[in-house]
Image (cartoon, rainbow, N blue to C red; front, side, top):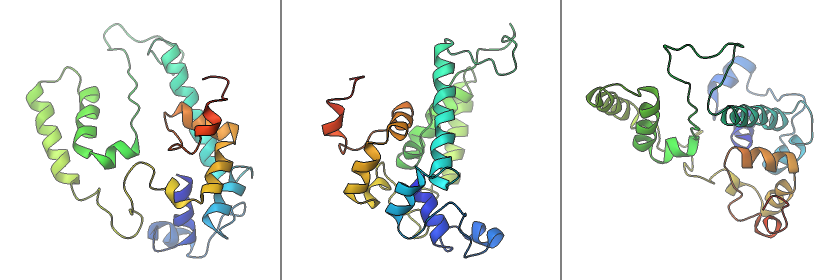
Length: 196
């Protein structure tokens, strides 16, 4: 997300809606757009920067997911227990890379959760409609959508940048909480990680 945010901020053609509302030269005051690597490295340490905010929003998501799972799958958001006539809430950890990598499989999984208990024919019909409607959405467009595969954005960073990010404990915990890895950049560090 940090890499994607950099290109949105640094290149108005990538995110024309953002540029239209904020101006084509608008850069948030706590961000550095000198280079992608600088944006990410400085950003994870700079409170108020876009990368820092992304990391902290993601941390809240991991905390929610952990709380949800530790409560046995029951999330109590309003202080009351689930009603007897309602099904227990469930948590589906949906990943962008899964959606763009195989939209059909991702949509089937999503619909299986959202339409649990609905007739199979209805689920198949909804699945077919979604796949047909969005089949062109997951191909590179030369603007915001370039490499649409797991690891495409991390591959845009210098290896030295990734190595430094691997050592950032808070970011590492967030990625682990979201079931992401470092594509073997962390191989040397993982063997000494206390949780392994």
